[in-house]
Image (tube, rainbow, N blue to C red; front, side):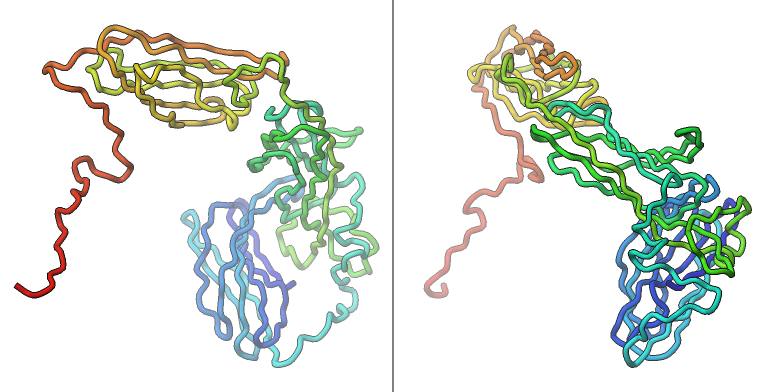
Length: 442
């Protein structure tokens, strides 16, 4: 891989890399534009490069642990299609980011008319990057210098019970860059996405580690003995470049600033950190005591509800606003149940108007069909509490209402809500614009 970089302390650094330095006509190479110190850079427009056609592939966000410091970066990837033979300079490129102008390095990509030569031996005194299976490759065990631990709040839970999945990356006496977000198998579970990890020191077995902690809410969707993981994190280990032949990638990284003349003194090697898998016992929700209108909500909840306005004219709508809040899996929370007679109310489907990490808000429209004093029946929300291992219900209401007769004695007609995108009164009148075909002019 061709690469060069210049870092400035406490500033965004702009680096370009290629996945190869030679390619055949009609072949492709990958160009990477990496911005160190930020992840808020949209895809740059790469200027035309002589001898190549350019396609954008997409972004990738990474993290690095260097001398105990964690840094973020984003890489935008491009595919270069070679059209002509010759040696072509790629870069330098300039961009304005956060009020500063950053400038990348320049690289040379050679396009050959024939096949690209096989991998060559490195110059004397410069070790070649390892192949898969060689010492120093991604499959080599880093021992207690870097490892990954996957954990859950508990190992026995119920279907739809939400838990926090925690993944910790431990690093000691080793610098790493291009740390990718974790990947893990999760059959039988619904997952979201890992957020930005926390950084903290942690002591394990008398040794101090720099720890990246990722957290994600998950919940099982079926019962049984399920397996999570193993979790895998890919990264590049940074090791000193020496004049002697390297016997191990575990040589100590000095504490001096590795960003100065970085690639003159250091090189990177791919590593893959893998956790142990987790076995989770998932219990089905009990049938005993299950309410008839239970719809799968699991957690510990409260509910607030109101019906407004309380005084209306016959034919006008009442809006029920219901807020379910608490600790649990809000993804499985549906609208609370209300039992009303079709003779007394016209009822519309409830809608979710807001949802965050702790509450979910529903609104439902009902229209009274009869005048006089009365009430909207109570609203009931049923859920299963995994801590108590039983079903619970919260209620609100009934809500008194006063439905007034219209001022003029006329038949009240309850109409449907207008369809989305249709302006009331603009409905087409059938036949208004129909002109029949004439058999002969007249």
